[in-house]
Length: 354
Ligand code: NAD
Image (cartoon, rainbow, N blue to C red):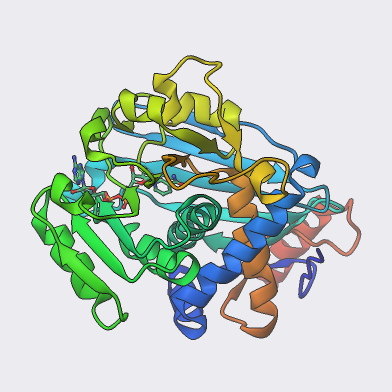
Protein backbone atom coordinates (compact mmCIF):
# COMPACT_ATOMS: atom_id res chain seq x y z
CA UNK A 1 0.00 0.00 0.00
CA UNK A 2 1.11 3.58 -0.54
CA UNK A 3 0.78 6.26 2.06
CA UNK A 4 0.68 9.72 0.58
CA UNK A 5 1.30 12.75 2.71
CA UNK A 6 0.33 16.07 1.15
CA UNK A 7 3.28 17.97 2.70
CA UNK A 8 5.97 16.93 5.11
CA UNK A 9 4.69 18.60 8.27
CA UNK A 10 0.93 18.36 7.89
CA UNK A 11 -0.99 15.21 8.81
CA UNK A 12 -4.56 14.59 7.56
CA UNK A 13 -6.99 14.43 10.48
CA UNK A 14 -10.54 13.07 10.16
CA UNK A 15 -12.79 14.58 12.82
CA UNK A 16 -16.10 13.06 13.92
CA UNK A 17 -17.85 15.69 11.78
CA UNK A 18 -15.83 14.76 8.68
CA UNK A 19 -16.25 11.03 9.36
CA UNK A 20 -20.03 11.50 9.41
CA UNK A 21 -19.88 13.46 6.11
CA UNK A 22 -17.69 10.76 4.59
CA UNK A 23 -19.93 7.87 5.68
CA UNK A 24 -23.06 9.70 4.52
CA UNK A 25 -21.40 10.45 1.18
CA UNK A 26 -20.39 6.80 0.60
CA UNK A 27 -23.39 5.22 2.41
CA UNK A 28 -23.00 3.15 5.60
CA UNK A 29 -23.57 -0.20 3.87
CA UNK A 30 -21.12 0.33 0.95
CA UNK A 31 -18.63 1.70 3.51
CA UNK A 32 -18.89 -1.49 5.60
CA UNK A 33 -18.75 -3.70 2.50
CA UNK A 34 -15.51 -1.96 1.48
CA UNK A 35 -14.05 -2.39 4.98
CA UNK A 36 -15.05 -6.08 4.89
CA UNK A 37 -13.18 -6.47 1.56
CA UNK A 38 -10.09 -4.87 3.11
CA UNK A 39 -10.33 -7.10 6.22
CA UNK A 40 -10.67 -10.19 4.02
CA UNK A 41 -7.60 -9.15 1.99
CA UNK A 42 -5.59 -8.54 5.16
CA UNK A 43 -6.74 -11.77 6.89
CA UNK A 44 -5.56 -13.69 3.81
CA UNK A 45 -2.04 -12.28 4.35
CA UNK A 46 -2.26 -12.76 8.14
CA UNK A 47 1.22 -14.33 8.67
CA UNK A 48 3.04 -11.18 7.50
CA UNK A 49 1.47 -8.98 10.19
CA UNK A 50 3.16 -8.07 13.44
CA UNK A 51 0.62 -9.34 16.02
CA UNK A 52 0.16 -9.13 19.77
CA UNK A 53 -2.76 -9.22 22.20
CA UNK A 54 -3.88 -5.66 22.84
CA UNK A 55 -2.38 -3.79 25.75
CA UNK A 56 -5.15 -3.22 28.27
CA UNK A 57 -5.34 -1.10 31.39
CA UNK A 58 -8.24 -2.34 33.50
CA UNK A 59 -10.15 -0.49 36.19
CA UNK A 60 -13.24 -1.49 38.16
CA UNK A 61 -15.55 0.21 35.63
CA UNK A 62 -13.83 -0.37 32.31
CA UNK A 63 -10.73 -0.76 30.22
CA UNK A 64 -8.48 1.47 28.11
CA UNK A 65 -6.71 -0.41 25.36
CA UNK A 66 -4.00 0.13 22.74
CA UNK A 67 -4.16 -2.02 19.61
CA UNK A 68 -1.03 -1.92 17.42
CA UNK A 69 -0.10 -3.86 14.27
CA UNK A 70 1.98 -3.52 11.11
CA UNK A 71 2.30 -5.21 7.72
CA UNK A 72 5.86 -3.91 7.32
CA UNK A 73 4.78 -1.03 5.08
CA UNK A 74 2.23 0.68 7.28
CA UNK A 75 1.80 0.66 11.05
CA UNK A 76 -1.40 1.41 12.91
CA UNK A 77 -2.70 1.65 16.42
CA UNK A 78 -6.07 2.37 17.97
CA UNK A 79 -6.76 3.82 21.39
CA UNK A 80 -10.12 2.49 22.57
CA UNK A 81 -12.03 2.36 25.83
CA UNK A 82 -14.90 0.18 27.07
CA UNK A 83 -16.88 1.61 30.01
CA UNK A 84 -20.39 0.08 30.23
CA UNK A 85 -21.43 2.51 33.00
CA UNK A 86 -20.78 5.56 30.76
CA UNK A 87 -24.17 5.68 29.05
CA UNK A 88 -25.84 6.43 32.42
CA UNK A 89 -23.99 9.76 32.50
CA UNK A 90 -24.52 10.55 28.82
CA UNK A 91 -21.16 9.23 27.59
CA UNK A 92 -20.40 6.52 25.04
CA UNK A 93 -19.46 3.01 26.25
CA UNK A 94 -16.81 2.84 23.50
CA UNK A 95 -14.78 5.75 22.08
CA UNK A 96 -11.69 5.52 19.95
CA UNK A 97 -9.15 7.29 17.80
CA UNK A 98 -6.32 5.92 15.72
CA UNK A 99 -3.21 6.53 13.67
CA UNK A 100 -1.82 5.07 10.45
CA UNK A 101 1.92 5.58 9.88
CA UNK A 102 4.53 5.03 7.23
CA UNK A 103 6.96 2.32 8.42
CA UNK A 104 9.71 3.62 6.12
CA UNK A 105 9.96 7.04 7.81
CA UNK A 106 7.95 6.42 10.99
CA UNK A 107 5.91 9.53 10.17
CA UNK A 108 2.16 9.47 10.88
CA UNK A 109 0.18 9.60 7.62
CA UNK A 110 -3.35 9.80 9.04
CA UNK A 111 -5.02 10.55 12.36
CA UNK A 112 -8.70 9.89 12.77
CA UNK A 113 -11.62 9.56 15.09
CA UNK A 114 -12.42 5.85 15.39
CA UNK A 115 -15.62 5.71 17.42
CA UNK A 116 -17.75 5.63 14.28
CA UNK A 117 -15.04 3.77 12.36
CA UNK A 118 -14.95 1.06 15.06
CA UNK A 119 -18.72 0.55 14.84
CA UNK A 120 -18.38 0.26 11.05
CA UNK A 121 -15.44 -2.16 11.21
CA UNK A 122 -17.10 -4.27 13.91
CA UNK A 123 -20.26 -4.54 11.79
CA UNK A 124 -18.11 -5.38 8.76
CA UNK A 125 -16.07 -8.01 10.67
CA UNK A 126 -19.16 -9.66 12.20
CA UNK A 127 -20.94 -9.91 8.86
CA UNK A 128 -17.79 -11.09 7.09
CA UNK A 129 -17.42 -13.92 9.63
CA UNK A 130 -21.08 -14.80 9.06
CA UNK A 131 -20.44 -15.04 5.30
CA UNK A 132 -18.25 -18.08 6.09
CA UNK A 133 -20.11 -19.44 9.12
CA UNK A 134 -23.85 -18.67 9.01
CA UNK A 135 -26.32 -20.93 7.18
CA UNK A 136 -26.38 -19.87 3.52
CA UNK A 137 -30.13 -19.25 3.59
CA UNK A 138 -30.03 -17.12 6.79
CA UNK A 139 -32.55 -14.30 6.58
CA UNK A 140 -33.49 -13.61 10.23
CA UNK A 141 -31.11 -12.18 12.82
CA UNK A 142 -31.77 -11.54 16.50
CA UNK A 143 -29.76 -8.81 18.15
CA UNK A 144 -29.65 -8.61 21.92
CA UNK A 145 -28.27 -5.29 23.16
CA UNK A 146 -29.55 -2.43 21.02
CA UNK A 147 -26.98 0.25 21.81
CA UNK A 148 -24.41 2.16 19.75
CA UNK A 149 -23.16 -0.86 17.77
CA UNK A 150 -26.58 -2.28 16.92
CA UNK A 151 -27.69 -0.51 13.72
CA UNK A 152 -24.19 -0.91 12.23
CA UNK A 153 -24.38 -4.64 12.95
CA UNK A 154 -27.81 -4.98 11.39
CA UNK A 155 -26.95 -3.03 8.23
CA UNK A 156 -23.70 -4.93 7.74
CA UNK A 157 -25.53 -8.26 8.04
CA UNK A 158 -28.12 -7.05 5.56
CA UNK A 159 -25.45 -5.93 3.06
CA UNK A 160 -23.01 -8.84 3.47
CA UNK A 161 -24.96 -11.80 4.88
CA UNK A 162 -28.36 -11.18 3.29
CA UNK A 163 -30.65 -10.87 6.31
CA UNK A 164 -34.03 -9.19 5.76
CA UNK A 165 -35.55 -9.40 9.27
CA UNK A 166 -34.10 -8.34 12.61
CA UNK A 167 -35.56 -9.23 16.01
CA UNK A 168 -34.54 -6.71 18.68
CA UNK A 169 -34.25 -7.06 22.45
CA UNK A 170 -32.70 -4.82 25.08
CA UNK A 171 -33.32 -4.58 28.83
CA UNK A 172 -34.04 -0.92 28.09
CA UNK A 173 -37.07 -0.93 25.73
CA UNK A 174 -36.21 2.63 24.69
CA UNK A 175 -32.95 1.34 23.15
CA UNK A 176 -34.91 -1.14 20.99
CA UNK A 177 -37.40 1.56 19.96
CA UNK A 178 -34.55 3.90 18.96
CA UNK A 179 -32.81 1.13 17.01
CA UNK A 180 -36.04 0.21 15.16
CA UNK A 181 -36.72 3.91 14.40
CA UNK A 182 -33.16 4.39 13.07
CA UNK A 183 -33.62 1.36 10.82
CA UNK A 184 -37.02 2.49 9.50
CA UNK A 185 -36.64 3.18 5.80
CA UNK A 186 -33.72 0.74 5.49
CA UNK A 187 -36.02 -1.82 3.86
CA UNK A 188 -35.75 -4.28 6.75
CA UNK A 189 -38.43 -5.89 8.86
CA UNK A 190 -37.52 -4.84 12.45
CA UNK A 191 -39.46 -6.58 15.23
CA UNK A 192 -39.19 -5.40 18.85
CA UNK A 193 -39.32 -8.34 21.28
CA UNK A 194 -40.23 -8.47 24.97
CA UNK A 195 -37.61 -11.03 26.04
CA UNK A 196 -34.35 -12.40 24.72
CA UNK A 197 -36.04 -15.81 24.43
CA UNK A 198 -38.69 -14.24 22.20
CA UNK A 199 -35.99 -12.46 20.13
CA UNK A 200 -34.07 -15.65 19.26
CA UNK A 201 -37.27 -17.46 18.17
CA UNK A 202 -36.80 -18.41 14.48
CA UNK A 203 -33.47 -16.53 14.17
CA UNK A 204 -30.74 -18.11 12.01
CA UNK A 205 -28.14 -15.67 13.33
CA UNK A 206 -27.96 -14.40 16.92
CA UNK A 207 -25.85 -11.36 17.73
CA UNK A 208 -25.16 -10.41 21.34
CA UNK A 209 -23.92 -6.83 21.77
CA UNK A 210 -24.64 -6.01 25.40
CA UNK A 211 -22.40 -3.99 27.69
CA UNK A 212 -22.00 -5.09 31.29
CA UNK A 213 -18.74 -5.63 33.15
CA UNK A 214 -19.54 -9.05 34.53
CA UNK A 215 -19.90 -12.72 33.61
CA UNK A 216 -23.42 -12.17 32.23
CA UNK A 217 -25.69 -14.85 30.80
CA UNK A 218 -27.45 -13.22 27.87
CA UNK A 219 -28.01 -16.58 26.16
CA UNK A 220 -28.66 -19.87 27.94
CA UNK A 221 -28.21 -23.28 26.37
CA UNK A 222 -31.94 -23.98 25.94
CA UNK A 223 -32.27 -20.87 23.72
CA UNK A 224 -29.88 -22.19 21.08
CA UNK A 225 -31.23 -24.59 18.48
CA UNK A 226 -29.32 -26.63 15.90
CA UNK A 227 -27.80 -24.85 12.92
CA UNK A 228 -27.67 -21.36 14.42
CA UNK A 229 -24.75 -18.96 13.98
CA UNK A 230 -23.89 -16.89 17.07
CA UNK A 231 -22.03 -13.61 16.71
CA UNK A 232 -20.90 -12.77 20.26
CA UNK A 233 -19.66 -9.17 20.21
CA UNK A 234 -20.13 -7.85 23.74
CA UNK A 235 -17.91 -10.25 25.74
CA UNK A 236 -14.54 -8.63 25.04
CA UNK A 237 -12.74 -8.19 28.33
CA UNK A 238 -11.53 -10.38 31.23
CA UNK A 239 -14.55 -10.96 33.49
CA UNK A 240 -17.00 -9.73 30.79
CA UNK A 241 -18.84 -12.49 28.91
CA UNK A 242 -22.34 -13.04 27.51
CA UNK A 243 -22.88 -16.75 26.83
CA UNK A 244 -23.54 -19.66 29.16
CA UNK A 245 -20.56 -22.04 29.10
CA UNK A 246 -22.74 -24.95 27.93
CA UNK A 247 -23.36 -23.13 24.62
CA UNK A 248 -19.61 -22.95 24.06
CA UNK A 249 -19.29 -26.70 24.64
CA UNK A 250 -21.86 -27.38 21.89
CA UNK A 251 -20.40 -24.91 19.37
CA UNK A 252 -17.61 -24.86 16.82
CA UNK A 253 -15.74 -21.74 17.89
CA UNK A 254 -14.04 -19.31 15.50
CA UNK A 255 -11.75 -16.53 16.73
CA UNK A 256 -9.54 -13.68 15.55
CA UNK A 257 -6.20 -13.93 17.39
CA UNK A 258 -6.23 -16.77 19.97
CA UNK A 259 -3.74 -15.23 22.46
CA UNK A 260 -6.08 -12.23 22.79
CA UNK A 261 -9.40 -14.12 22.64
CA UNK A 262 -8.31 -16.62 25.32
CA UNK A 263 -7.95 -13.66 27.71
CA UNK A 264 -10.91 -11.55 26.60
CA UNK A 265 -13.46 -13.65 24.73
CA UNK A 266 -16.22 -16.07 25.69
CA UNK A 267 -13.57 -18.82 25.68
CA UNK A 268 -12.01 -17.39 28.86
CA UNK A 269 -14.65 -19.71 30.43
CA UNK A 270 -13.01 -22.79 28.84
CA UNK A 271 -9.78 -24.71 29.29
CA UNK A 272 -6.79 -22.88 27.75
CA UNK A 273 -6.35 -25.66 25.17
CA UNK A 274 -10.01 -25.91 24.10
CA UNK A 275 -9.92 -26.19 20.28
CA UNK A 276 -10.79 -23.06 18.31
CA UNK A 277 -10.36 -22.17 14.63
CA UNK A 278 -8.67 -18.96 13.52
CA UNK A 279 -10.88 -17.15 11.04
CA UNK A 280 -8.00 -16.17 8.78
CA UNK A 281 -7.39 -19.86 8.10
CA UNK A 282 -11.02 -20.22 7.00
CA UNK A 283 -10.71 -17.17 4.75
CA UNK A 284 -7.61 -18.48 2.99
CA UNK A 285 -9.12 -21.95 2.56
CA UNK A 286 -6.89 -23.84 5.04
CA UNK A 287 -9.76 -24.71 7.39
CA UNK A 288 -13.48 -25.25 6.79
CA UNK A 289 -16.11 -22.80 8.01
CA UNK A 290 -19.63 -24.22 8.36
CA UNK A 291 -19.68 -27.88 7.36
CA UNK A 292 -23.24 -28.96 8.22
CA UNK A 293 -26.71 -27.52 8.59
CA UNK A 294 -27.00 -28.75 12.19
CA UNK A 295 -23.69 -27.30 13.39
CA UNK A 296 -23.75 -24.40 15.86
CA UNK A 297 -21.07 -21.92 14.83
CA UNK A 298 -19.83 -19.23 17.19
CA UNK A 299 -17.77 -16.20 16.24
CA UNK A 300 -16.22 -15.23 19.58
CA UNK A 301 -15.54 -11.64 18.54
CA UNK A 302 -13.31 -9.39 20.63
CA UNK A 303 -12.00 -7.02 17.94
CA UNK A 304 -8.42 -7.34 16.68
CA UNK A 305 -5.87 -4.72 15.56
CA UNK A 306 -5.71 -5.99 11.95
CA UNK A 307 -9.42 -5.11 11.50
CA UNK A 308 -8.63 -1.52 12.51
CA UNK A 309 -5.59 -1.52 10.22
CA UNK A 310 -7.87 -2.62 7.34
CA UNK A 311 -10.41 0.12 8.15
CA UNK A 312 -7.63 2.73 8.28
CA UNK A 313 -6.17 1.42 5.01
CA UNK A 314 -9.57 1.84 3.34
CA UNK A 315 -10.04 5.29 4.88
CA UNK A 316 -6.62 6.42 3.70
CA UNK A 317 -7.48 5.41 0.09
CA UNK A 318 -10.91 7.01 0.30
CA UNK A 319 -9.45 10.37 1.35
CA UNK A 320 -7.58 10.57 -1.96
CA UNK A 321 -10.91 11.12 -3.77
CA UNK A 322 -13.11 12.33 -0.89
CA UNK A 323 -11.05 14.95 0.92
CA UNK A 324 -13.07 15.09 4.14
CA UNK A 325 -10.16 15.97 6.43
CA UNK A 326 -8.22 18.89 7.78
CA UNK A 327 -4.45 19.12 7.98
CA UNK A 328 -2.89 19.14 11.43
CA UNK A 329 0.41 20.87 12.08
CA UNK A 330 1.74 17.76 13.83
CA UNK A 331 5.34 17.37 12.76
CA UNK A 332 8.28 19.65 13.37
CA UNK A 333 9.92 20.48 10.04
CA UNK A 334 13.10 22.57 10.48
CA UNK A 335 14.98 23.52 7.27
CA UNK A 336 17.95 21.54 8.58
CA UNK A 337 16.54 18.40 10.30
CA UNK A 338 19.06 18.55 13.17
CA UNK A 339 18.41 22.22 13.88
CA UNK A 340 15.25 21.71 15.95
CA UNK A 341 16.37 24.23 18.58
CA UNK A 342 17.27 26.77 15.87
CA UNK A 343 13.73 26.51 14.55
CA UNK A 344 12.47 27.34 18.04
CA UNK A 345 14.79 30.39 18.26
CA UNK A 346 13.72 31.62 14.81
CA UNK A 347 10.05 31.27 15.81
CA UNK A 348 10.77 33.35 18.95
CA UNK A 349 12.57 35.92 16.80
CA UNK A 350 9.63 36.18 14.37
CA UNK A 351 7.15 36.44 17.27
CA UNK A 352 9.20 39.27 18.87
CA UNK A 353 9.51 41.09 15.53
CA UNK A 354 5.74 40.94 14.92
P1 NAD B 1 -23.89 0.45 24.47
O1 NAD B 1 -23.65 0.71 25.92
O2 NAD B 1 -24.14 1.61 23.57
O3 NAD B 1 -25.10 -0.57 24.30
C1 NAD B 1 -25.22 -1.75 25.05
C2 NAD B 1 -26.70 -2.10 25.20
O4 NAD B 1 -26.80 -3.35 25.86
C3 NAD B 1 -27.49 -1.08 26.03
O5 NAD B 1 -28.59 -0.58 25.29
C4 NAD B 1 -27.94 -1.89 27.27
O6 NAD B 1 -29.22 -1.51 27.74
C5 NAD B 1 -27.95 -3.31 26.70
N1 NAD B 1 -27.86 -4.37 27.70
C6 NAD B 1 -27.05 -4.43 28.79
N2 NAD B 1 -27.28 -5.59 29.46
C7 NAD B 1 -28.23 -6.26 28.76
C8 NAD B 1 -28.88 -7.52 28.94
N3 NAD B 1 -28.60 -8.31 29.99
N4 NAD B 1 -29.81 -7.92 28.03
C9 NAD B 1 -30.12 -7.11 26.98
N5 NAD B 1 -29.56 -5.90 26.77
C10 NAD B 1 -28.61 -5.49 27.64
O7 NAD B 1 -22.61 -0.38 23.96
P2 NAD B 1 -22.13 -0.60 22.45
O8 NAD B 1 -21.18 0.46 22.03
O9 NAD B 1 -23.31 -0.92 21.60
O10 NAD B 1 -21.26 -1.92 22.65
C11 NAD B 1 -21.87 -3.16 22.97
C12 NAD B 1 -20.82 -4.14 23.43
O11 NAD B 1 -19.98 -4.49 22.32
C13 NAD B 1 -19.90 -3.59 24.50
O12 NAD B 1 -19.71 -4.59 25.47
C14 NAD B 1 -18.59 -3.30 23.77
O13 NAD B 1 -17.46 -3.41 24.61
C15 NAD B 1 -18.61 -4.38 22.72
N6 NAD B 1 -17.85 -4.10 21.49
C16 NAD B 1 -17.17 -5.14 20.94
C17 NAD B 1 -16.48 -4.95 19.76
C18 NAD B 1 -15.79 -6.12 19.11
O14 NAD B 1 -15.04 -5.95 18.17
N7 NAD B 1 -16.04 -7.33 19.58
C19 NAD B 1 -16.44 -3.70 19.15
C20 NAD B 1 -17.16 -2.65 19.74
C21 NAD B 1 -17.87 -2.86 20.92
